[in-house]
Length: 68
Image 1 (cartoon, rainbow, N blue to C red):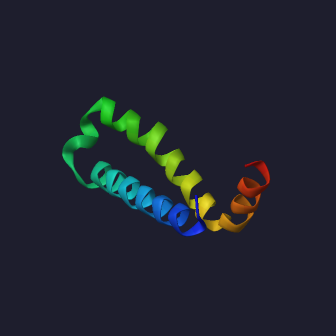
Image 2: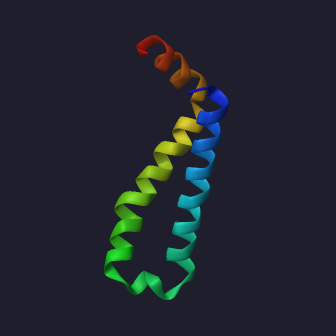
């Protein structure tokens, strides 16, 4: 995976996750227990990890090159 495709896929994942969190905050779906659990315990940590991955992309790409 090239650095550009890695960055692009992380960016889109982050945007979609942000839309899910925005839906949780501003819609009546937050009353749904399954949606609340999914957002709080799956989507939010995934957004944090994708944000860190975008921040430290250079380190990750060097690690991927060394492993693969």
